Image (cartoon, rainbow, N blue to C red):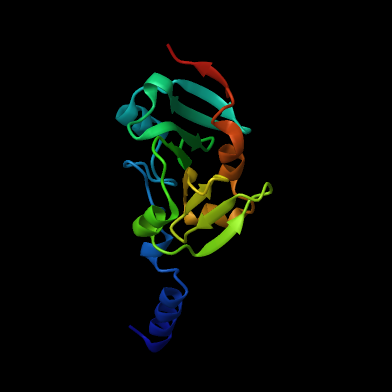
Length: 171
């Protein structure tokens, strides 16, 4: 490797921008930025609801069709059918210690407009805590999508779980 390439590679790795770091962390085999809608429905079956949620196309699994370990899971899609974000509402309470044991120390600690704590990670994971300090929702996004401004999952975690999406219910 030429000295300039070696220096660039070292700088990128120190900044956390190595190819491995740029890859999104997936959930249940669904990787934002690469998994497509057909892969989701093949893996989990038809969603309980499909349509627009918070202005974005979504597949929603809840109720009898909730994925094991969740109260609800939402898969947000680009126009071409590629998953760009997965938002999971855990069925069991998860505390901060459990989150750190799973994902490590967050890259950034922030809060939402209504002052709920959010932990963000370079891998594209964001963890939203409820006012009681337990996990309310976990968002999985491609890291490059995180550069685009406010966290779309913040709106989803803020109450979309309780909302009925503008969608076609599945039989």
